[in-house]
Image 1 (cartoon, rainbow, N blue to C red):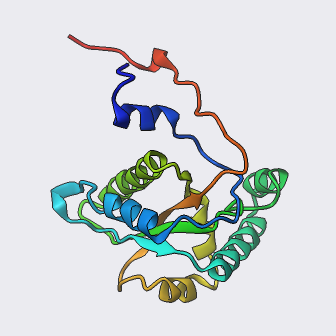
Image 2: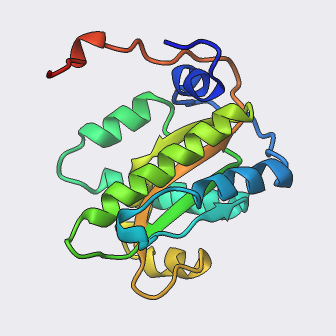
Image 3: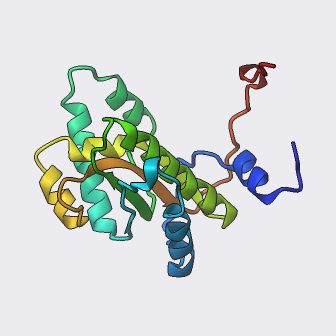
Length: 190
């Protein structure tokens, strides 16, 4: 691996932060991360996603409460129990998040690939700017109940857009480590 390459170093050092301080990243940093997000490629350049930077702590708290309530209501309690064992927080006290709403594409499901690319762009840009992140699929539970339309409206989702994923942003309470890569998952075909 090329240890002198800043991009490769950001990829190798990024980890999923699950304990954030209250410190909000500056608007300049958040703007740089959002601008990196919209440079993401998408199938046929459709860009069937939007990038919503959420700094409203009360809105984040309301979304978290709704998500936990919706998880608790599921017949399968495994996800709820896992979250509760980690302190009962979906968003780990993150002061900020970027929500990525998506619109359906043809073929169906292609928008999910594009959404994932945007989320990774955000996480890598954040890491390169010394901001911690967590790509958070559990945000979908915030939109799984009676408050979906309310949250769509508060986040100004365009007509026809629904939740894709979110990336939590902030500063870690303590340093974490990236997962150990499993190099056995790589092979070459010649």
